[in-house]
Image 1 (cartoon, rainbow, N blue to C red):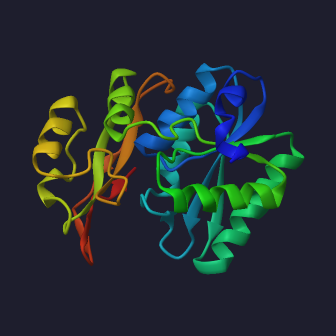
Image 2 (image 1 turned 45 degrees about the vertical axis):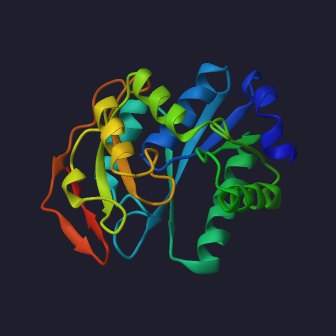
Image 3 (image 1 turned 90 degrees about the vertical axis):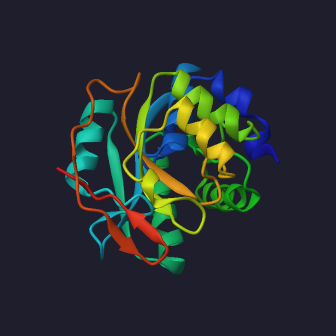
Length: 229
């Protein structure tokens, strides 16, 4: 498929791109790799749950997201949306706006899940952008290790308690943590939804993102660490 098979060509170009950013480790690493290879970031785009007043999936409130924007020095566009078909339509509308401003490519942090690849590729094809997946078909272990070796810092902020122990919540992702997760039979990259992370510092950041951890919240099978200003 052209949209992800030509990643090397994308990454050697000076093309302007938007990045689908979640504040987690995979999207951060994809952004980092795209920039290091010479692509020019135009903006970050992030879906935002208007009802809960926080980012989708990672649950980060807007004041913290603006601190991320300031530290990265890249404009952050929030896609304020609901679920279902509206989610897709709102995502595509943002891509169209960024294309009109000069973006040619949208960068995603997906690694090997075909359904994610297909969804992202459809959104780009519908809006005239090309999809790029800098991490595509990396081994999950290699993706985590490259993230850590690059100097990024991140903590566990969402845990699926049916897949891993809730005691991981709030801990820092390290090489030692990766070893423990593997011994516990947990996918080290969390690609199956085992966990989500919040990246606070690293080579892309001008300064660490400051926040206050809230009291853990239970939501179904998930336990969540609120990220507060």
